[in-house]
Amino acid sequence: MEPLAGTVVIGMGNEFRRDDGAGWALVALLENRAVQRPLPPGTVLARCDGDPGRLIALWERRILAVVVDACFPPSAQPGRTHRWCADQGGALHSAVAGRHSTHGLGLTEALHLANSLGRAPGRLVVFAVEGADRSLGTGLTPAITAALPRLAQLVEEELRQNSEPTRRTGLDSRKHPI
Image (cartoon, rainbow, N blue to C red; front, top):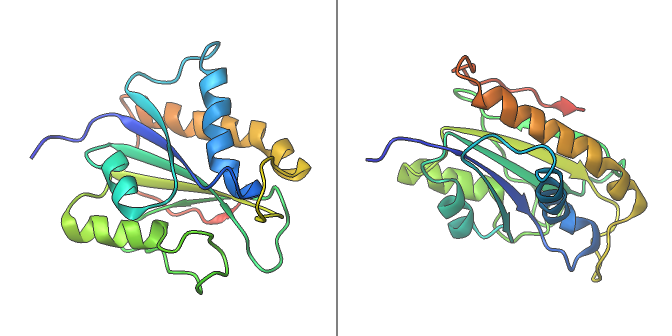
């Protein structure tokens, strides 16, 4: 088996479902920012529609996978961002169908499948931004557009922390609004 190497940032979602395109928009923003502030060596930026097979292919054999997606909880505060990181024994739980995700099978199912197949990343960090509108159409709502620069900064900080030679080897689980 090949050793783990590099980092991937995966913008998950659908740019034709308004705020569900937040992950893709974040990747575009990171691509633009990287011209002035290069990302750590070995960092790949990718877009994914959330298909479990494609997610697994993107994060397989990576030291770190950062996934950015929109979420749509019942009492959403558009633009509020959450960070989740797997710990030893922590688990993502499936949302009630259609309640939080616009993906039929999503991140939780992909992670469970990847773990079963031995194809999970070394470390997974998820940033979820609460959206307001997932109707058909393009363009993000103003609250999501306003949240993206701060979210890009948080992702860049995550990448820098994990690219340092003295990076933490333990896993943590901070599940709280940022």
